[in-house]
Image 1 (cartoon, rainbow, N blue to C red):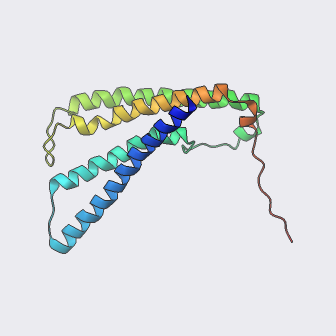
Image 2: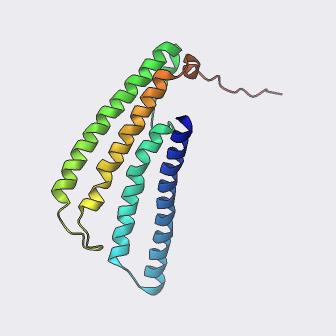
Image 3: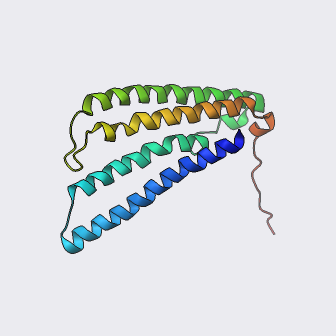
Length: 169
C-alpha cells in the first residue's frame, strides 16, 4: 500500500512540476513577445493566470503530505511524544475542517460564476474556478492520509529531534 501511495504522490508532484514548468516557459515567452515584438495574445495571458491559480491550489495537498505547511512548534516541542501525536491529529482535523469549508464555498462560487464565458480562451469560467474545489478535495484526501499516518506511526516518530551542535575548536 505504501508503494502505491509513493507512486501516486510522485504523479501528483509531477503534475504540479509540469504545470509550474509550463507556466515558467509561457511567462518568459509572453514577456519576450510583448517587449521585443509588441505581440500579445489575451488567450495566452488568461491561460497563464489560470495556470498560476492551478499551481497555487494544486500544491495544497502536497504541502500537507510533505509537512511543508506553516507550523509554529515553540510550544509543541515541549510535549512528550504521546501528547504530540494527538496534537498532530487535532491539527490535521482543524486543517480538514478549514479545507472542507474551502471546498464548500469554492464549489458554490464555481457554480455561480462558472456560467460566464472567459474573454481570452472563450471557455466557461467553471473550468477555471473548478480548480479550487478539485484541489480542495485532493487536499482533504491528503489530510486524511496524514491523520492515518499520525495515528499509526510509532511514538518514536514524535520524539524531538536533537539540534546539531558544532564543535568549537
